[in-house]
Image (cartoon, rainbow over all chains, first blue to last red; front, side):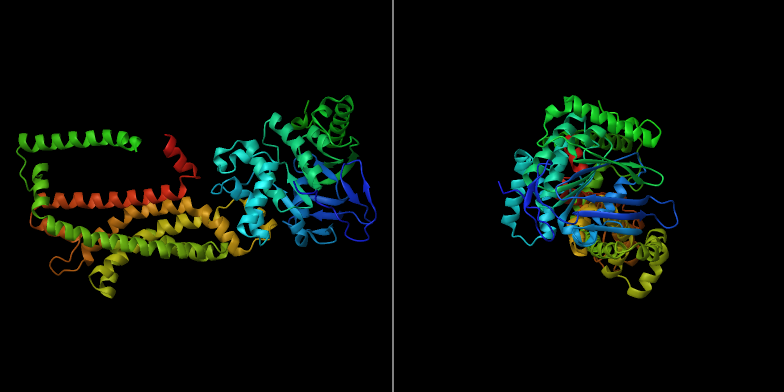
Length: 289
Length: 263
């Protein structure tokens, strides 16, 4: 097992402090990610995002939640530098998103695996494209990650032979293989059944406690957002904007037991309520037990 | 393999039945041999003239395979060019469609005038006929890559060449093989029609197409049937070769190959 990935402050490192989110990090005068007065629109069309500002500290796990059309996926792609900003700024560790790509990995809603590569081959992809490692080092790293997500027994299988949950694990392993400091996830568990989703939620928290990355997570599920996050960001549509930021105080490590904790359930209720209030209609999809 | 034999039994039974009916019809209705020869006579004619039959078959096979391979090279090169940008596609795709729409007999006189008769012209006809399915399918394969996969490669700062070799080309393989399958059948048709008008006229240099015209003009209907059968055999062999290649490249990951395995 390798040591946890250090999250270094970009400048003037102060003594490391242990935080309630379970990740040791250095206090920094500037947030790890800062989004300021961000606007996004395509051509002369209606704005997708309007005056969005968000500060994310290293080690945070931030969930973006809101109705479809609120621009949460767009915000994620803007931070990833996959689409250009219309107005405002995004800063990732002192860099523009385009220059900060080496720090980031992206996990999509579908696993987006290469069907012609087996599990190892897929996990190696990021290493192959980014780093100049020799093949044996690469395979070693890939195998480490495959073990970490519990897929050693299917390492030689092809994606078509895997279940949806397994594919998503491969996708997570691939994203983590390049040792990102920021993980961007666009509804990664949206297509999975609830049991698999819950299990992967717990697993992603375990991986985070081992590796210490920061996360920006888009989801439709309030329960998932509350379970995973240090902070839930509630968005509203037309135009997309941030309406509430709700801190989630539960300490890490969070386990299965938290799901039936009355405090957890009541906070899920509060967030659902906030979402409903802000967005008028009943958010059908979000009603998790 | 067991599966293959099981699959082969029923079509074979149909073949035997048809041959028996054919044989029976020629005997019962006393059909003259120059109209419909008895299947036994067809086999006999093929055996008697197996040397010239084999030679014609070889000449046609060379034209078909040669033209096919050339059109694979040219087709993939064109597809790679077309895949570079939507602008290039908009400019050039209408002209690739011309390949498909202008009947070969319309261009044949030009080919004959420019290149004379002989293997070169026949191969050119094959290329013209085979090219379009390869270009169209390969281009479609190269350009239909999932957006998220492209974004994934962008997130890794992948170079254009990395995207081509690690994403677009492997993704295009199934579509490319679909093109090859269509063209493998077309190549024999191309060789045949090329020989129809552009085959070398010196004795024994014409392929199956030329031999068939000759046989029909001589009312050697039994030999004509043997030639048709040889033509069908050539096309089938070629098609099966391509299918086998496809299986070798795709069976471990692609759904189409998987289905064939499980059916």
